[in-house]
Image (cartoon, helix red, strand yellow):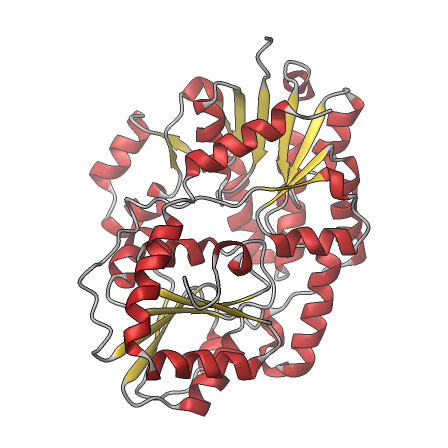
Length: 404
């Protein structure tokens, strides 16, 4: 059997680093083309660890990958460009369009001629996918979020419902939507992580036979189960994600204030703008921690009881699995991977993203039924243990090998 050679292209981080490691495990990774990355054991990494302060070490740790340097092709200039353009360009959509166009032009088509399959990611593959098809290679689009047309509809709804949060919802120009459609149309296969994402594609005319569902994995050793967690004491609810309307933060705040629990507190963790910070009520039972390094998450989660993620629009929501692996009771929506990984009232709770009353009801249910939370915590950890990165890699390998 001839071994398939795969080129993986992604300028950032997300789950592409895990995918690269899985392709290497299956011995089919030819090259991982990306932005700034460091391989374990390199002299640059050793110097960083020795000289830089702790906060910078954590920044760099998110870019360390365990693959051979011969399989890496990095363009640190992409990350530099992001920093420079971020000063000049205020729109995040414009910023990443220019940066991702720059990155795609760095990918050599001489390299593409040496491989069989290219895996690219949404918003960073419209040029790459066209060149791949021109060279008669197979192209897989890894779609990290649901279809942009449905996203625009959701954003329009949220802009009307929460106009004070409008700055956190950047609508896309038509040309960017056209580029994303080109990626979808050029793909021989589209890999999605949730049924929600798949359904938005079907709704917008993408053939079912092109779509492959492959949920992400979680590091169950990093996010460890706390079997001493006490659900009888003051409950700590936690939200983790960008503090935006899309993630459901204003809906969560509205629900929280409606209940106004006396023996509970809500922690809000994630990147937050100055305008959004001013919209958070200054009350005793809500604490805004802002952005924290990913390596610090397990320690903070360990001290919490319930993870609330009322997102209106996701591709998956990996933090849901991380919370489940840690034994937190999860409350989330059907616009995430919730329905794919949670059996309602057994391993957590999910509800229609637009049913705000249900969010209130589930928060109150957790407050009033402490005995139920322990069994859900145990079941959540057990379910998370079945979502390993190796299982994710095995499914991806099968998708690649079964391309027509």
